[in-house]
Image (cartoon, helix red, strand yellow):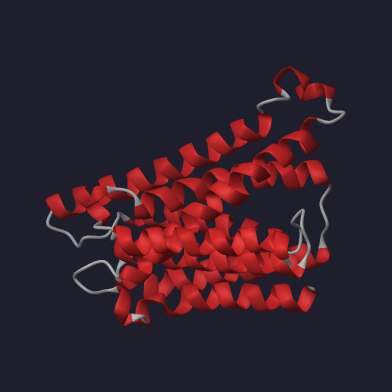
Length: 246
């Protein structure tokens, strides 16, 4: 399994590295592939991330009297914190770009905002890489589902970062987020955390995943295409449901 998860980590890193060269995604009209990927990612949120919150909430609350007063909500609270954090980061980048344009500068965020944004996504990628080896379901089918869903999530998310940071994505961002992801995988191969800690990581990360999936596909200014989006959602749903037939 460690070799397979390394392969998945390298696949994710390749998406980060080559998104700028995927010319079919960068036309004047939003690519149907991005909308298809968004449909898959949204389905992943509803069929995996949200049910996973319930599982991890039970793990974290079990036998932990310190959080008994909020045992029914703790992982959901962490997910909310993750969602708010990444929403705040995205709004900060958008506002910074607007300020830069108003000042006659390039349409990229201020340097400080840039590093805060990329630092946060480096942590995000590190956690995703770590969970490749430390998920609750270690079956080959589950790994395949995770790899497919997170791969298309990175496809749409990296397109968003490429749009925010332009040439800086090619020169800096892709290297940082790829290295962070592989560092997360390496840490996961060497360090095994206790289940409650994994649940805390999953809760915060889930909120970030939900936010980043929704912000890339659903806003009107993304010019999403409903047909490919619905096809992606149906396609991934069929794959998930087929697990019970295997």
